[in-house]
Length: 255
Image (cartoon, rainbow, N blue to C red):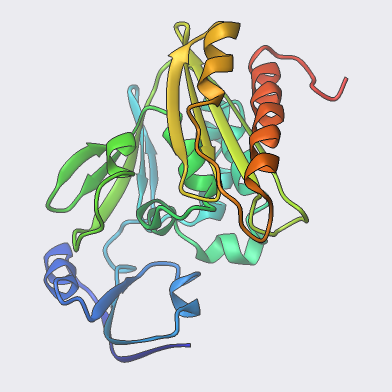
């Protein structure tokens, strides 16, 4: 159970940033996973008054506020059309609608959770994060950065002509995924992200041909946990990559 002494609804990012420099304080976003921790916090920092819940589109990019709920992202028509509905595919099995109404995009990206469908799909897009002090950082670099006390403001997705696909495997609906796989193809450049390995999602970029795609599989690292073995995940990855490729080609992998 999460316990805390103080709860502050911040009126500015600067106020939130200063409070967050104390390692005994925590930012509360959707509170979907924080509440599951067995810890004591001095102060919970609420960002809900800072206007960070939005999805804005212009000619070159989408900007998604950190406090945007997963449900709002899932239902956004513009970004779904841009990603061939891969966003909906990635989010629709995350627990349930009530959970997705609470969980936030920023919390999912900042957490860099090993099981994150959200991180997996955004990795194959031309994505960036905007940090309050750290500025704009590409998501592929952000994934490997050490956790610090900065604040994630928004996620930026640059528009390109990529074809996008998403696949996952769960032992049962709404459970954490056994493996996730996202793919994007743009100008013969293929991005493949595999998550729930069970480590956080990993991105591999290659040229779009059978030989390179086959070699890329061996670059992913897998391990075992209660949901699946290392070898099972390796074999499953072959299937999910094949399914994503068929989606990108416009084929139905069920036939």
